[in-house]
Amino acid sequence: MNKKLLRSVMALHGDTNASLANYLGITEQSLSNKINENGTEFKKNEITGIKTRYNLDADLVDRIFFADVVSNLDTNA
Image (cartoon, rainbow, N blue to C red):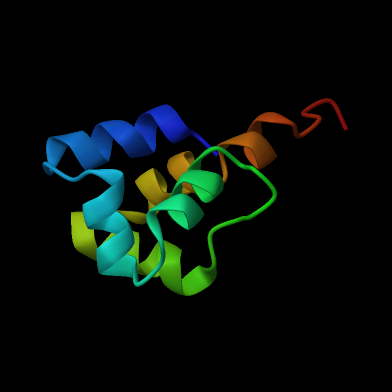
């Protein structure tokens, strides 16, 4: 997860953790845990909600939510 990129998108749209959590129907603490990868992950419907709220294209969604998975692939295989 690229939390810096998500936070920059949030800031660009004037969102805070509280406003995004409210939009997603989750607590601010739950959102914070998901962003900081404290044992919880974003659910598919939450990723879809963020994509819709910020009008993100598929590439940006991948860069935000799946950055670690892509960067850990062994390209020499």
